[in-house]
Image (cartoon, rainbow, N blue to C red; front, side, top):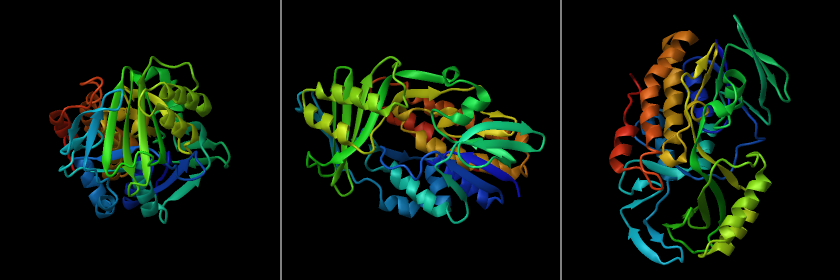
Length: 369
């Protein structure tokens, strides 16, 4: 039984571990955080990714916790409604679609609970070095003892450690898209009832949606900016930057700034894409945002992670673990799908991609191809 280390315990990594286990591999998932991460924005499961979730037996569960929006309002900088829709929202698209929008943390919890009995999880640890020879990959960890695995998969996000160790500095592959996104939660101080609000004020804007039976808000705040000098791991500096920007807004700036200041799940990062000529080297390959992050502007990051995990595991199974052949097939099958979905983030700067482009991109791959 081949052993596979999967670095990253978000969504892509555990989904891959599920499929690897189903195909007779022995996966281990290592996650830097001490437990599953809370918070995060609503994510979409679209098109062929729905088939992945259905094959995992999680479609009904995902449907039960999906968001139930009635529509959205678009506001001017002073908070006056200038448009509204009861047919679609910017976060999920058409409300009558079969696609599922749910909180990232809910999807991550589902997948973890679906896999924890059969998959080894190492929380509170991370990969620090990789050394490959003809028999496997020796992995050094920040805290645990070194171990050797047959294969290693980096599913550790936009700022992937595995990618850095194997392929080089992030700057070679990251393409900044001219903005930053902050996501955080607060109590529902706007008393929103299954209704979103979107506002743009110059180079800044936000979307606010109620969650948890309208008891909480998830606030997604974006601002245009060249790459910042801030260390993106310095959460306190980024938090203060976001607080200051929110405080300068005309409508609800003070309360939004306070919410950002107090949020236990504050997040902020650049809107960027990862573009690479190849995703694999030797026994190591990349999955999801680590190899082909499309950015949240595409609305397809979660779907790419779900589909990529299924395709990678399928390619390994079909080649009896011959990683060279499997990785080549994985890239050949996934790259056109990735290209179409990454293009969604850049086709309409400052706004959501068109319904036609999304419809084409989300179904442009067969799981059994």
